[in-house]
Amino acid sequence: MRAVVTGGAGFIGSHVADALLARGDEVHVVDNLATGKRAQVPAAATFHELDVCEPLDALFADVRPEAVFHLAAQADVRVSVERPDFDATVNVIGTIRVLEAARPHGARVVLASTGGAIYGECARPAREDDPRLPLAPYGTSKLAGEEYLATYNRLHGTSHVALRLANVYGPRQDPHGEAGVVAIFLRKLARGESPRIFGDGSQTRDYVYVGDVVRAGLACLGRGGGVFNVGTGIETSVVELYADCRAVAGSTLEAELAPARLGELQRSVLDAGLAERELGWRPETTLEQGLRATWEWIREE
Image (spheres, rainbow, N blue to C red):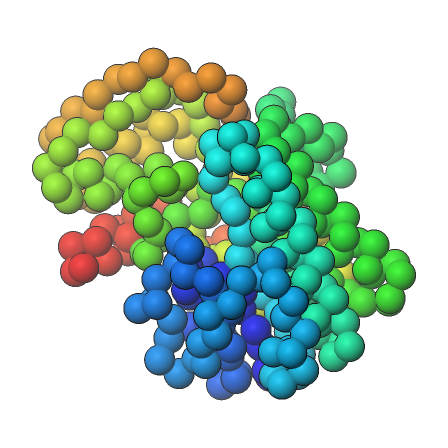
């Protein structure tokens, strides 16, 4: 299969590229390196330093992809609040560019969307048909991208898929910017520094390992279009997560407490039952296993 991975120099995208190459696929990585790292692009992939906000038609005409994994995004919630126009340009216009470039070739698009930022606060694990109540422009722009996929499916008879991801963690996650808390905690512990916990640490998240996310993306190939949650359905508080991180790192460092951050979700957990029923996907990596794999990667860097 010929595949394009946008954002393939980034955290999740580079893992997707690795998995496609392992299957024997031809992989083309598109990344402007604004946040991605050239060193993370697999050697066997063809790299194209391009911005998804610019037309991609010429590249796609040359590659003639059969599948596009669209992971290029503006993913910093704080940036989306400060620069909503930039956030929309990358996440909405960039998605339209991908859809238009893919359309003449009948390529299926798999969009990496977001769970917590779209659903907002939920009283139980969120399902795909629950109210969508974004609390920041980031969630709104990703939701708009999903709606464009659905519109193209109706208009052009395509089978594009959007995956609403829980809190993804694992090797290669950058501990800077709007990084996942796992990367921040483990990197701090590796340096002998105490991480900060905002608020009382009782806020909960659904942590899903990057390898499981990649499997979910591959499971979309050859299936019908739609929207699927990708998470574990298990809530872990920040305090519990830090205790788990200390355990895998063999550390006794206490975390520093900091004031709660305005607008932070207190609960974010996804019900991935639909993905299990329709894609045959379920998470296989426990939090302990995933943390250990991430810790080993940090130690070997």
